[in-house]
Length: 339
Image (cartoon, rainbow, N blue to C red; front, side, top):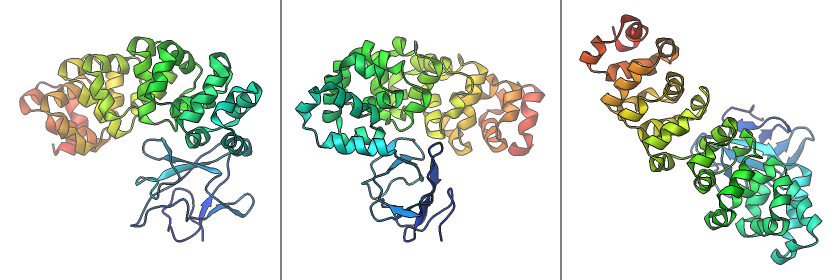
């Protein structure tokens, strides 16, 4: 019996993977046994054939980063999967058969391989081989690749290689990307992109691209940026972009801001960040910070928050400050705060 996508699965049974070029499937991690891609059998329901894990790419359900399928436990929070194309599989096999120094010629072979590799293909090749391909192609040919291939190469590159590329070249590459190209990119590589370009140059990217990159940041990077820079980062996003962050990243953004800086955020963006927070995380922000949030969010946006979340916010506001709030700001949360 095969479970439907999105349901819990038993690692000892077959798992059904729907073959689709337009959608990723999802499975939840459950039970005490870790998921092992190398011992689980995968069924392609379009052909009714069992397949090995090689034709699949796995993405962490929490971070969206590409996962090494060799890991015994892919993701505690579940994972997304995607079938790889025949061209990507073939390109990877051909690339592994080429000695590193042979990527320099004939050039068309290297360009063709790079144009067909996918995220997993570049990752499995490793940073050294991938950058050898880049060096052989040169910047002009690199920038002619599809946005997914450019992202795959950037995702595989290490700190020293970003230094060699430099801010201008990374920025030029980033302008070729789409927001969805950051799906699969690790937090470290997204942060390297940002740091190599610098804040000013990064803010020159299209909003969707900038949001895709920032959405990959981990908590430590928001802390390193500091409140003043985080305000600029959030200010460059659209109103809906902060709401696209997961709780952990949204909390990191808010936590990186002190009271002065969070007061500078436009209500819509502040609401977007707050929407993603979990009610039990609110008390970690401190009374002063939560009071500013409760005061600065527009009433209509406060009303739109989850009731438990809105209640948790109001419960942290000292009574003296709460008495200064207008009735229409407090009334939507009364059921949650016991009023």
